[in-house]
Length: 391
Image (cartoon, rainbow, N blue to C red; front, side, top):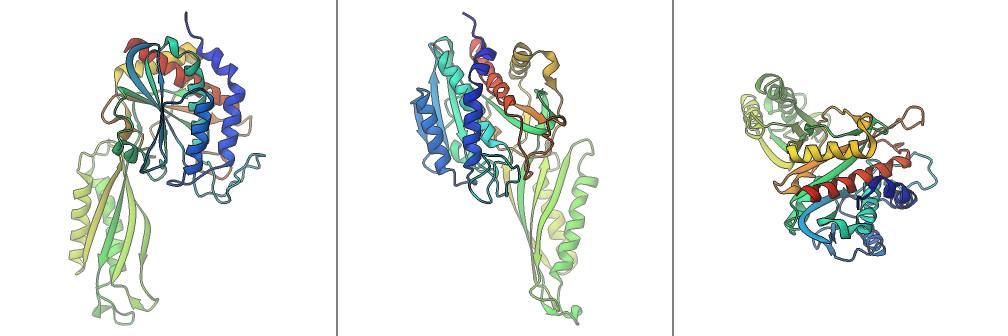
């Protein structure tokens, strides 16, 4: 008998909304999701899902739904953490943890995955394989996926599916585009060393601030003159600290920044190191780079997964509900969970001028029309069902 996923998602609409409101009211920062995990565990147990594994070195959690017939295992992922933002939505269920808000929408991701879990649990006898529910902490600092992989949380999956609600895409459209979706996001630290002197006698010192300023400018050559202009790349310095006093030539500067790209054709780490070290040396100082690879690019490149996603949207909502979202240089550590296996990442639009939902993710006023959430649950469940049917 065919499973009507859309009907089930509408049947569970109230449940999905209620759970979203609960998690929205009780946000926790990256690495602090202890209570969130406990709440999720209780919700899963209430659905009759009891094969639950809690991570030891982080607040991640996985839960298995075993199908009635043998087959592969599809992983479905939601992130859990919130942001250090003071909420200004005016919602009756606004954050009760002062200065912390689910401004990125991870509360909705939790609710949508719980909704999909409720659907799949109700039809598990008809599943040709298994579903691993993955609730990941610490996405906002791009650490949680690696922590979970270190504990072998996703070793058992054959493929991975994820979704993000997105304030720049019109509601109720769903983006299932192939190719580049979210950029690789790395972190770097730069230390510049000079020699201090009185500000009235700069010739007696080596100005680390001046060196640092030149490094900031010269690093843009990596993007504009070394990198292929057809390959998107960003190098940004977000923090610049130096100088003990207004009239002292600084002997040390610290900088922190990020790089974003889809293809690392120029070996960005070593290219930056060459620019940084040579700029400092040319000005009589010294500089060091510490480069940390955090999140790989999200690229929907598996043709089978791409086809399953498109067919699932059309089956549920029709061709007219497919939206087009251009690639973003924002980062997401989701692909780490796949460990080289096929994955797909979708976006659910929440922008609605008429309804007044115009804020984008990470803003103090970001929220959404909650009736959209059942669509996310439906697509997640449909993708899992269809993947297992053809696997």
